[in-house]
Image (cartoon, rainbow, N blue to C red; front, side):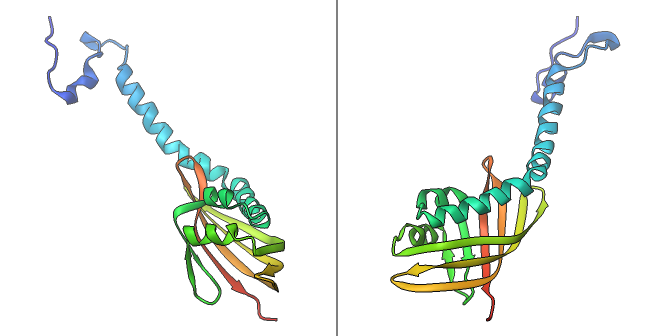
Amino acid sequence: MASVPQNAASLLYLNKPLHGGKRGNPLMKKCLLLTAICLVMPVLSAAQAPSAVLAMENMWNRAEMNNDAAAVELLLADDFVMTAAEGTLYNKAQMVASVKDTSYHPEILQSTEMTVHASGNTAVVTGAYYEKGVDKGKPWERRGRFTDTWVFLNGRWQCLASHFSIKVK
């Protein structure tokens, strides 16, 4: 009669048939399946990246149009950073507060020419934008280019970094 192995590493072989049988090790199969899932999930998220991330970009525009700070909060990663055209940096809390401020009222927020560059759990969106509205009683209008970096974190796409430039008239 064979003795039962005592060390943790040998637990993988507890269900190994004696004398060269073909049954296989269920624990080993589970480990291999788990490894395969871990390897495939980033590929699946990357395969869905273009449509998912473009949807997030459009949701962000709609959320700002409606001063929906809660929606913007869900779209941005906790360590989000935005670099504005003049070089000012904004974190997530500052961005959410600016959207919550009803003295900021965009009438038009359009993103066009968007292209998604995806790799693994990261997607970079480049595009053009047109914005028009009123901020603290003053009308504004601008066009430019933007770059947003999205990461697939905790089961959803979140914007980690954003940068925009203003097109000179």
